[in-house]
Length: 193
Image (cartoon, rainbow, N blue to C red; front, side, top):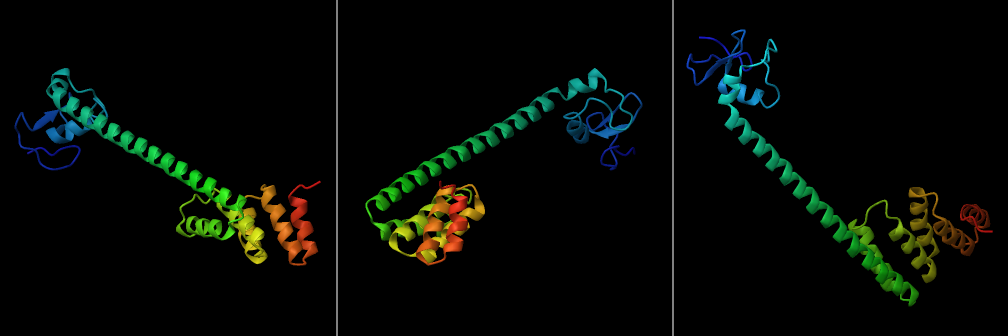
């Protein structure tokens, strides 16, 4: 019995299970069906399979192509859903930030800090979205908690050294704590004139 050039298992000498290229290289039907998805040439000698052989796999190839397209479509739907979900979460996040900024404007610092800490501790925000860190620093500064201001704003400026408002409040916090050298360092980076 001949062995398949792809899987190396024996092949029953049957026209439904054994196929050959023009150079007589034997291959299983299932192995050839998979191979034809990639090439119409023999995997061993690269000679093209006859049209007669290719015609026998037309339905299978079409079905495999449809399955492949269905998988691509399903993946695209999944990716589209992920993008919509990401956008919805971003909108919710921005709405929460808007509410928190209003609380700060209304001098309700404790409520603002509480909501910000939920976002911060749950990791509900993207690490690259420095707004949570900035608002935590600002609200703590306005509440008179200068050590916490420095804690959050230093994390912020480590992520984004080009965040002038972060450096501004950082400098003000250092100033309130009687650290003029550190305050100057922060104010210099805040680009205050």
